[in-house]
Image (cartoon, rainbow, N blue to C red; front, side, top):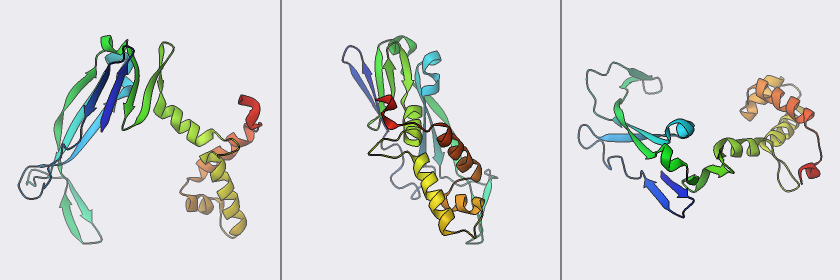
Length: 191
């Protein structure tokens, strides 16, 4: 994960979390097989920007009582041991005052709008789900169109079965249909 923090002054800080796993974790005992990075943007206004890091040790011990039963291969497998992590304060509250944007792996996830921070992840998700114009259709519009197509093509299936073919719970499809019906407007209303 590459995290870039841009400041009003033009200063840029880059944090790079690549290569924090063992290249051959099964060759020796006690190596890191996965690293978990928890970027806490939800704590931005109260604590600054934090990255919490945990890792999973592939060392197998008798102490590990958690097991997963692999039915396909008829064997019991131990869970890896999740190790206590560390916390990295990437940006303090004082530094945050001059931050203009935060970019993770090339995607802007936080930016300053006037004097407030915008959650770019939430915005992008809503844009993807809801925004349509002449050249693009939202996921919600496409889901309704595909649902309707499948329903017409498979009249013998229930609405639940049709929704399941899409990978949607029926409640989500029903909510999308309700929301789209309530928001019928011309694309040019916002232009």
